[in-house]
Image (cartoon, rainbow, N blue to C red):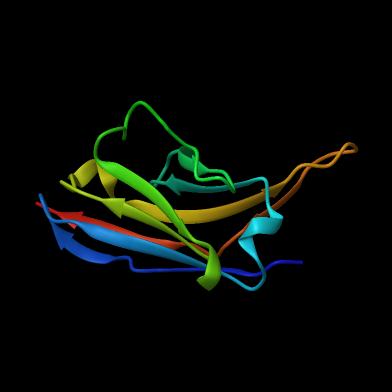
Length: 119
């Protein structure tokens, strides 16, 4: 079972940028999709961005243009660059790995990293 560890969160000011990282305990090439999600207090967890092994990406409409997902295959890491942070971006950010299976996908989560945007 893969172990995912997020890092890079913190307390930032409005308008600043952050780069979140997700380190995997095994090759991220083994997974069909790597993604980033977030959960704000009192809200459901929401999908932000995904990336496939060949580098194809997709973003939620709410973050497109401000968020960029990338991957570093040799280091087994996935990153999320967030620009122009807003108070509404305050949340715990989670990394997810998905492995497609005929009888049901295998899905793995990290423990999350807190991002707090202060105005």
